[in-house]
Amino acid sequence: MRWLALVFVRTKQVAVYRAPHAAHALLVLKKRDKLGTRRAFLVRGTGKKWVHVYLPTRPNGSLGWVRTRAVKMYDNRYRIVVRLRAHRLQLWSKRHLLATYPVATGTPSTPTPRGLFYIVELLRPSNP
Image (tube, rainbow, N blue to C red; front, top):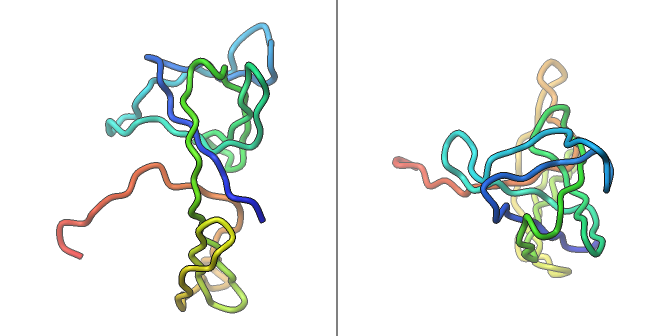
């Protein structure tokens, strides 16, 4: 499995398109969200002038295209993999397993969501 990249918006706002060179933007997002957090996207793929990104909108897994000049790309060498059947969370750095932790999973009435997710802000609780 490869490690992922992410981009942060570097302009005042970013236009998101359904496809590169589409006539109209699908949506326009500000540089920061309602809480003041810098807008970030997980990268699915890149081209010379366009970046294919996962959108922080519903439905989960939504994709769009943003112009390369509107974002700054960073490598994200860390990833978390949750193995539901094994009740394990794995922390990886590139191809190296750093740690494994036991985790609880959902119930039949409240199942654990499956899919690809990403974190845009690390919060430190006032009372852990």
